[in-house]
Image (cartoon, rainbow, N blue to C red; front, top):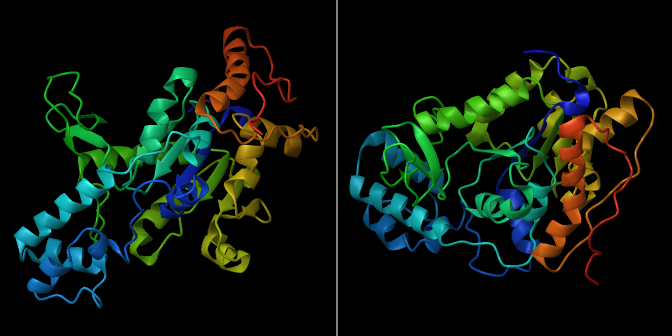
Length: 348
């Protein structure tokens, strides 16, 4: 790979269940509640079926139950019911009309960057699609590392897209992507779609500059995922200069212990809100601003997101930054490093 200036390298954002919980809480908990592994059996009305199959819903965790069914080959009817109910419930979730953390997140990154999600809910893709009006081709890459209810695949043509739409090659409707459950053997190469999502993340990790981990706790059930991310992050040729940012409500000591292997000396930051993160203090310019501050000793003024009540206000505020990117792409005009005059002020 040719040498890439640090400012032009990728900002990588990993998101887990905590990101969706933070978004749900932030928008006022409008809509159906977000399931967790602890309440999934009851929320999906599976208690009676699970009990009838001889399992105790109170002592057998959802992931353990699914792992047993998937690996043993027993009770395929219950396995099919669980998969149908999971897909049905998560597919019914939707973003409210107001700007959400996911809208800010999509708009905070450029096409060189990537958001890699472990979540099944459709929020990230919904935000990605509804902000197309302003970002056009200037949106980050997205990858769904455990599959997603909003993504469909065409196995024949090895393509993927929004579930319910048609494959551009054969015209057949996309079928649901695999949702990865088994905890004892989460094989990231067995399913072609999952493998492709991981391949894209691993590629970007090898040359990324800034790594943000938002609401992902790297649980013991995801040990393979954590190792894959760590191995590729450590292969990064600019690791000594990079930065890791943890966005989580857990106590700092616990977060430092969980992610210590990812840090180089004191090159990390911990925040309990994404609105305090460097990513949201320097939207669309995080790598540029970090490079200026740490390598050239010319820190930029912060340009934090205001909070908006209407989505089109947020989109209008970000538009001057996108215009500046287009000038930069067309004729090499340098970024100013100064907050640009916004098109609209934050709602009071």
